[in-house]
Amino acid sequence: MKLRILVIALVICFSSYSFPVNAEEIGSPEQVIRSYFDELNKKQLEKAISRWDKKTEKDLLDFIADRENQIQRLGLLNIEKASLVMWKELPIEYGQQFVPYHYMEKFKNIKVYYVGVDFEVYSQNEYFIDGMNYFLMALVREDGEWKIALTPHVPVRSIISDGYGFGTEDEKTYDERRLKYLD
Image (cartoon, rainbow, N blue to C red):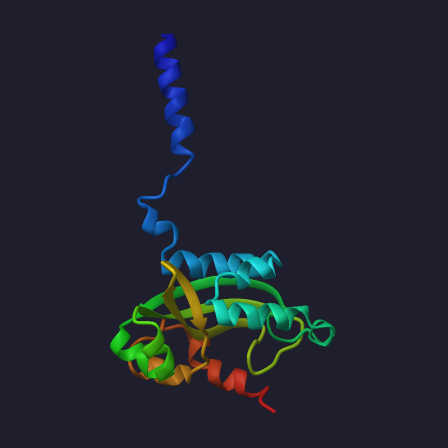
């Protein structure tokens, strides 16, 4: 009887803790993307920025340290809340058209994802609007780890018409909603 109770207790204990399938899963591109938005949402900007390639990481750290950027809440400092809602990997043959050539040359292993992120921002602009935002994320292998290299805003209409959209109604109006804030 005691053995049975012990076995049941162990099963319950271990069933509530999930182990990664393999070491690669922990640092997979999808995990980097999920962690990035989770950290942005928790206001852990330095940790989120550590998910970027080395050069961009340094630039972003300098950017968020700038007092004027903090006062004006520019860039990542403009994000109140962030929630990754949907994502999909795009075929590299398609996604590479949105990645500058020098990235393709510098990093041989690139993955391009199309993401839908629900943002609440302090001030809406051409980069961030309240509600669902759609953009690409290019991830590269740097020193054996997946890192974010860039997050280009591309015409979502093109992604939809090329058959890679998510099929949501707000996705269809995203370009129009975002471009209202272009200067």
